[in-house]
Image (cartoon, rainbow, N blue to C red; front, side, top):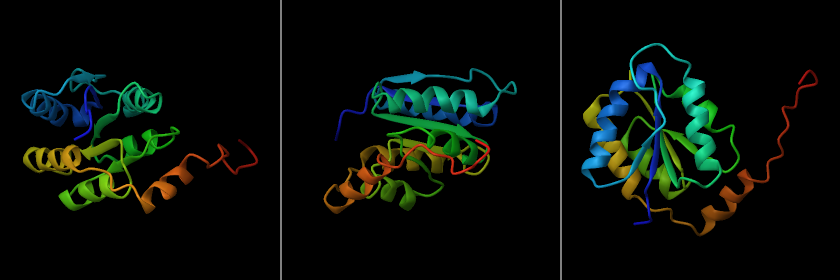
Length: 156
């Protein structure tokens, strides 16, 4: 298994409880975790915490990150705006496994209001232990990094 530590972790208020559960699980696995917040269930903007984690993964400071919001949709949209980030929203074990095997996902996104803590733990476990298959998948992933930063909009 690749060096997974430290793992960047972040959530908004809707994902806070699940983040704390996952953080405890990661610590039980003797993995180093850096919690980028939020630190309570007080209402916050998910974007702030998604940006913090995704930026650290994009810069290479962390190999992996986990983001959690209510559905996981907002966090995955924010994280995937960063070059070199491949954030995968996973609500089942098969998706978590394939996000690693074929997509080399470096950020796992979970929906705190969508899945329970035990399923989330199994998803995280699968995502952490599943290696990237490389081979033909490498060229596909490298195409992500060649996409120009353009909105395609004339008003942007």
